[in-house]
Structure formats: C-alpha cells, structure tokens
Length: 284
Image (cartoon, rainbow, N blue to C red; front, side, top):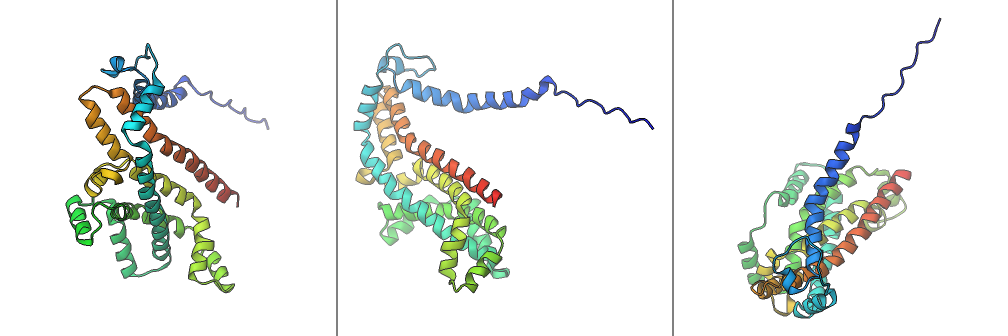
C-alpha cells in the first residue's frame, strides 16, 4: 500500500499585504496627518502659520511659541484645576462602579435586573445639560469643582458598571467563598479579592474616563464657566478665542500639544498595565 503524496502548503499570495497596508494608510490619513499638522504648526513663526499646512517650517521657533502659549493660557493653573476634577472623578467612578458591578454580577432577581438596566441606561441616554445646571444650582454646586466631579461621575459610571459586571461574572465565586470561610467580611472580600482581579478592566476604564474628562469642554463650560477654576480645555477655548482673530494658529496648536502630553503619558502607562494584567491572568 503506497502512501498518498502530501500536498505542499499553499504559499500566501501578494494579497496578504493588502489588509495591513490598508490599515496603515487609513491610520496615517486619519491620525498621522492631523497630528503632524498640529505638531509642525506649533513650531512655525506667525507668518508661516497663518494658513496651517503640512510643510516643514523655514524657521523653527518652538521655544518662543510654547513659552508664550504657556503664559497666556495659564497652563499651570489649568493643569492643577484639571487634576482636581479628573482624578477624584476617576476614583469615584472606579470604586462605585466596581461595588455596583459586584452586586449586579452576584445577585439574581428581577429587581436586581431592573436596577442594572437602569444603571447602564446612561450608555444610551445623553445627559441633559440644562437639567444638570439647574440641579447643581439648587444644590449650590454650580460653578464649583465638586459639581464638576459629580457630573463626570454620573456620566461615566454607567460605562464602568457595564464593563466590570461582565468581567466579574466570569470570575470564579470559589475565591470569594474561600475568603468568607477565613472570616473575611464583605468589605475585605471586595478590597482584597475583587479589586485585585479587576486590574485589567480598571486600567481600561481609567483610560476611557480620563481621556473623556480631560478633554471635555462642553460640560465644563456650563458647570464651571471659567475664571480661576477653569480647566485646561476651558483655557484652550479662551486662548483660541483670543488668538483666532489674530491668526495665531502657532500658539493655539502649541497649547493643544502641551495639553495632550499628560494624557499621552497616562495612555502609554495604562496600556502596558492592561496587557500585563491580561497576560498574568492567562498564565495563572
């Protein structure tokens, strides 16, 4: 009995490069070109930046542009105000979202299901600005950082609950039962068992909430309004209004670059933590 010949594996054709090349082209057009436009315009003199384009500057004056934009845009004050609003909002969204998701993932019943549907309804229903401002005025929180923290927490809590509930449902309940048998109460189980296991989804939620809240100008404009409590996006709005009529695009884009650098750093660090958390969980 003769063995049948094994056919040689088919060689991948030239079309295998079409999809990666198309992805790279789309990314370069939609992401690379705007980033290059902002970066290259931010180092041009005013005469070359009147009409922003993709060409290299004939004369680079990055230090002067960034220093002038830094001073006029009140960068330090806006940075501190943004931190005072964004960081507490992220902490509240993560803690409240993880606690609510733990309950929704472990409890059963119609009431729990209804409460879960109500909690994630914020994913589909946009917040009403007029109603928010009126409620904050009634509570005495309009124009305050606490009011802005409450708005961001309420806006992004639905997203946190949605992601964390699905993640917790896939965690084995035996870990919690073992902790209870050792005498751990609900608070200890939550902080020592549940939260450490949520590191990948917590990192993802941190990226999302920080990116949205850090760059938000719409709700901050209505809640804070400006002044000494203005965040970086509000300062950018004021700088743009002041410089737009003077065609000072180099100052506007310089402020955009400086405002974006903290979030770029957060994204890089948090992205590594997401990958590390997922791979460590897979190894275990």
